[in-house]
Image 1: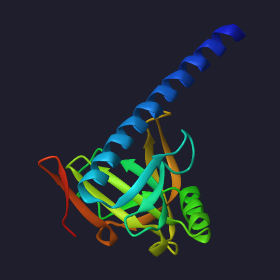
Image 2: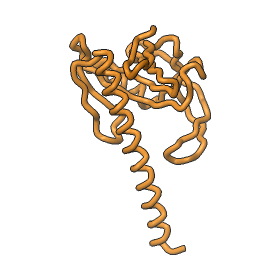
Image 3: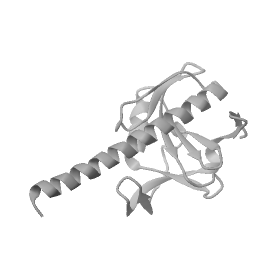
Length: 167
């Protein structure tokens, strides 16, 4: 195989990953817009550039600056008792907190449920090794993550196209 064929394969894979991430960002933006419109949690919110460590920044309804990381889960919110956060994201949440930003972690689940964590309350969580499937790379990996109990999140359920706080 020539260098140019290898380069073509690499470029094709990079383009596929870029398309995947762009698609996910559009879905995240639609979900956040819907959650914001239904709940009034934010006065303003803007999408951050692709490949930054958080997805949105904004101003909460109480006037607090915030950064928001969004995850989509393909399972029900009842599937697991905890979700996992990448250590680098936790580091970024800590930096945001030090700069007077409220760090929020929002997970949208397949059962039309959204869980919202105030990460300023989760900065002392423990790392643990887990196996994940990376859809971008299409591989299984053992990684270290922070476990967040789902019981510690604010819970919203989508009913008739509106998000209703249930916990």
